[in-house]
Image (cartoon, helix red, strand yellow):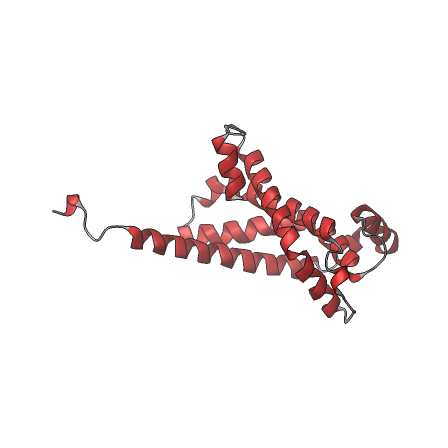
Length: 188
């Protein structure tokens, strides 16, 4: 995220469109994360289903994981940027928790059908196409099938991302404080 945002700033791109810059920064970061986590996601999914996996399968669902992560993390950072004025009214720790938790809920709710399709792909259920999986799920269970497990997923997202952002802000504040000189010229 930060690398993409820095690159955009250095090249004078999207300076007047902070939401677009946040969306793009998050999407690029999410895509890169998807490349890294696909093998672990596949193994986790297969173990949850008590289904076999092998080395040749480790990249099954790569495109669906990259697509899900790009959408979800891009939406997260766009929402985080858009909510800055509202969050500024809260105490810093609460602003971090509410921002991380609330924005992740919005992003996950929007991208949840992509996650459902990704899980089906990695479980080995037919096509590796996200569109084909979404069509199959819809024909079998309707739109509710796209959102199976949404409540648990959003609860986890709120707590994990809210807690993660709050902890990040605490560490950032501690590091900033420790980097200050013990005394400066104004103390003399």
